[in-house]
Image 1 (cartoon, rainbow, N blue to C red):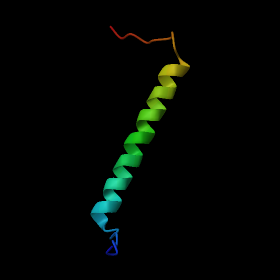
Image 2: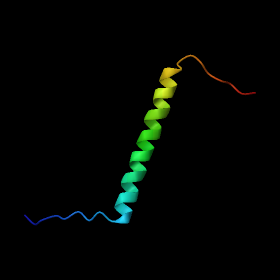
Image 3: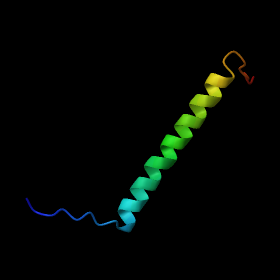
Image 4: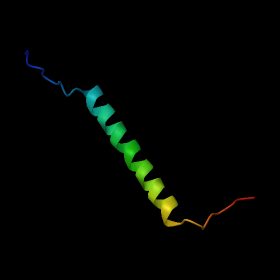
Length: 44
């Protein structure tokens, strides 16, 4: 078994940050949609 060293480079941090941001936006939108379950603002 060889030692696996994970290098936390800028690309890795950027990827992790992007995943966290997307997950946060998704959960926030889902919570908002669930919160206002019947209220919809239709434009037009």
